[in-house]
Length: 233
Image: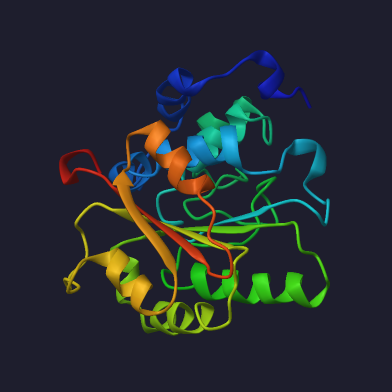
């Protein structure tokens, strides 16, 4: 398989790569809202690549917001995890690129996702598992949506991770104002109350995202709330 990373794909190529994926049920807004955060993570932050997908020391990325995976697939293709030639088959019966990512079919996918509310609890368990194995370097990243935080499973995960001191756990919340229930003080305040390190940034500003993703947070899990205008989400 030819590595697309070697072919020099950059952020500016992502709209074209996403445009190769056609058909129904694309969930375009759910995908485009995640594009910038995904690119910054895979281009500049995550310690993972096609050559080390089985490396126990790799970072783990979990896409909890799995119902709009077009941006995710485009980024994985741009970084060489999967062939660009797979993209036009998105959603077809014989394609590995389904409407929800399948970890058994999509190279680089750590979990099968799409049913909202599962990614963050799984990430908590993964961080605990790495700690139990004495693997202190790998970081666990999970990307969720703002509406997804209404799920009770996420509430329990947030409440547990802070007191447990899971400092290798990182959550990116894509806030496109789609949540049904407003939170007093905003999304970040909810995490802070549970003992997390938290910040809110412009979800389209790559430098702000990078700074937020790489800020130190000793002894605490980290959440970055990436705000995206609803019309672009």
